Image 1 (cartoon, rainbow, N blue to C red):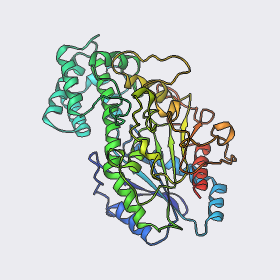
Image 2: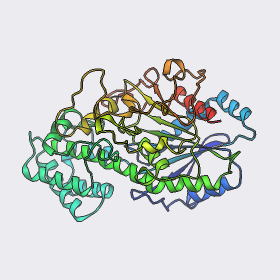
Image 3: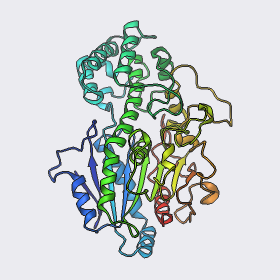
Image 4: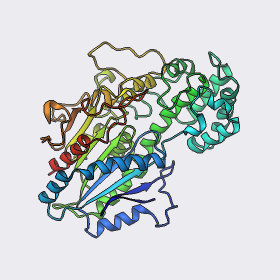
Length: 444
């Protein structure tokens, strides 16, 4: 389904990509990107609101998220009326981007601790190779792991054969490890299956309850990094060229078509890569007009021009705040109630050794959605905005500085949720939608 109607004359378009970053060809209406490029070329739309979901997004989940996100945006009638009064002929084009970021489904694991052990090993292998990649090496590793899931579910430690299969799978997936300036899928300690086991037992990464099946828990952890890598690669190789084409098709300055981008969780990786392009060094026809990164599941150092903990090296997305790539304001949200980013993210990053940092100090491995963007230069950080630097009510009036990043505490509104993820997905409230409208208003 390429168009979702949310009300009379209101809705959004969905552009879907496969795991390799190719736009899906199975839409009976043809390639959605081509249709939207033509629509922008006709001059019908003045503003584009474009969003990317994050980890765990299959098509039904993506549609559900976009229904809620864009529905919340359109429900704010006062904001919509203000936009129309401010800009003659204001007509927004809403676009949701889907990329396959669900490496496993509930149907594979069920609700019980050993549900996966009830599946035939071949089914588990086939399910994973379709999502992680079907190469002889990946298939062989998954076959060994699936056998362990089936027959060693209650083991207290990994056998040498299974541990080696995980090391091989890590290499086959191209999952690296490096310093804090590394790509977002490699800013982690070196992978050690035995150390990862301790991490996996501490948290099951937000999908059901499988705390008894140790081989399965580590597969989940590798899936976390595989999907993070996919978000970066698709952002660089598919979303970035798409954004260039959309910009070229829209109206040119001075009264140009404005682009307002939003990402959630790993979608912040995808959107940052969409702006920055390959290796974080690409260029756009002009700067995007506003950016909102909500509860980002990437390093707090990603946008720093000089990371002190990495010898002054720049973060992977440091150029996002350089050279006019973002012409308007950029906002980053954080919440103390987001345990997926606040607690699970550093555990997944520090896969060898313990996660330990002193209170009130910034960690080496920490998530954007827990700490905000850190290590910025004074001229990159926006001043205090909203009510005491926090997300306010739908009546709040924000003052944002163009071309600068603003950290906003969302703990008062991003607070609902349970389980291991906490409030990570509580982002469809009117306050967050109003923040997006306010960023667009401050874009000029």
